[in-house]
Length: 138
Image 1: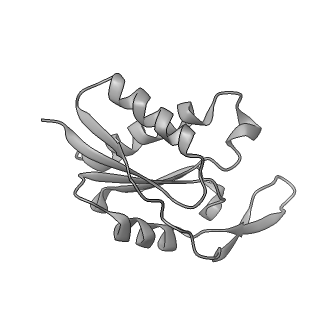
Image 2: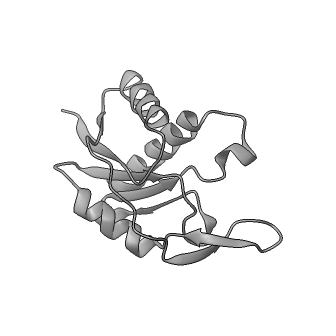
């Protein structure tokens, strides 16, 4: 029996990259059943300033607290849930997981600035990492 993992779009993240990531993951293994949530979760106004450049420039972004609360509300019957957005997140990280809640937040913000690989490859890798982090005992 496979483990259900729901991928939740947060805001206006491109659905083609997320759909490609889900297809890549489902075609390459049978341990997990990755599902793209049917509905996007609207993002509220940003709640923090995030430093996103080497020269210390900041721009509006999202705290872990607000993102994990949104993800908890969007959770459906899944062992793990991964929220994906394309906005800056706290500490300008690309991803963060919460093992106790089986949740991960991933942002593709700035990905194109550091890699020529498509966002779907980054998302696939991050989702696999999230499953290991969230579902494999410490």
